[in-house]
Length: 271
Length: 283
Picture 1: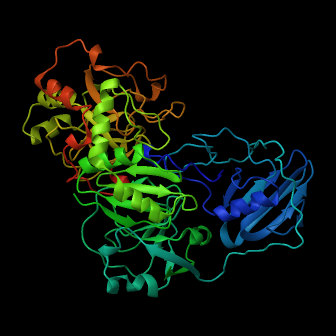
Picture 2 (picture 1 turned 135 degrees about the vertical axis):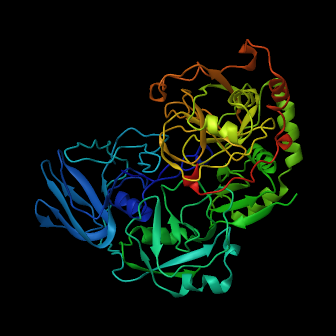
Picture 3 (picture 1 turned 180 degrees about the horizontal axis):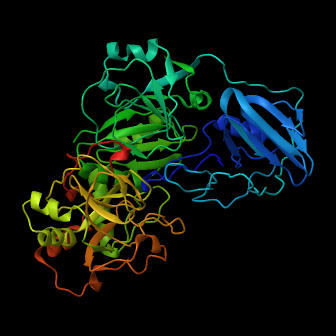
């Protein structure tokens, strides 16, 4: 379960957390008349089924796959109305990897430090949703379900994803020639990536030896450990890290990164 | 003093200082003059991360604000308000930390205590006396929620991290690394040398702030014979938060030295960051 996270608590060692594909969460929420930051489900890979116990509007955004209500397909990125007993099924993702499910009223579990986001590294916030669990839905939001005159489809790319990089605070740990592989080669998302960090597989990037004293990082920070294989820190990262941050993924590219599948190609370009 | 402002994406600046002492002073100065649009200030070993909402506070304005920050004046403010018992806030949106130290009860029976004392060429008793006698201050929190890096002018040991980190350090473990001391709020991997354990509620989501040891807070360790299991301690903090005046025993020489500096201005802190290394997983 994720909302837009808990910013502003870094000095207590609490990271921001929140939906990895923030645009998908905001879009799904807007489609059902919720505020952007209402809590929804982030479903990795798909394979989800739920039964509604009352009449409810909902929307699925983010990844692209087979979506069905009572066995009939419906379009992603649209508001759909389920009646009591209706069964929602989200199949395996064909494009992207993280479905975001928003329901009108939002998921209404108790907030922890101001947020309904699960922090998977620190281990607090709503527990991961388990089979058989009933999820409470909040009251009607003020806004009505907006009427759209066309479907808004933003399927994640099936081939290489291009991400925009800004300079990081420790960009000087690499010289221009050693950075060349970062921008010229295709990188692949390693399978051991998670909400803490996206690990990259590819041609190692040469850097200076040593480590920096622990320092605070931002979402999208590209850390370069001595192996030369970058890790991009994501929403559930530790607040501080000791590997040099040579670049930062632009916030506008973080949603796209959230939808990269293990093994899928990534290219980087300068902002 | 140099203060380098480094880019960290479109919504943050990383301000690099020469020393941890300057980090503490700069952090206090910035927190005391926080402009609208500032999202957070995150102090660390040698840096302060300044996170803004760029729609409300452009990065250029934030950089100008950082350049203008008057560290010496912040130290003066800190010293002046110590007299009245108030202090400038050190975290955005947090309440000012009380001036009286948090007293953390420690059972000094950690797995590394004997070997560490031997390697430092002191008796275990002397190491414990130095640890309890020192006046500590929270420099920053990192590694995990509520994991405070404590520094002290009175602490002169440089403790190497374990060559191979433990995969499981129990919650409440009190450890040493470099010039820092700290306590693990929850079970985690870790490479600090363990000298004892505490049942102080280091991290409590129902408290405000949830971290017992918030940045800027003065801390003292107190030797106790045993502590309850760390898991059974979420029962509030009043039992462990006491002023120095509650201490019954006469102060040792180290304690007297600590008392004169534990609430002192940030710029009086010494720099003990040389041994800080590792990523967020090295704590």
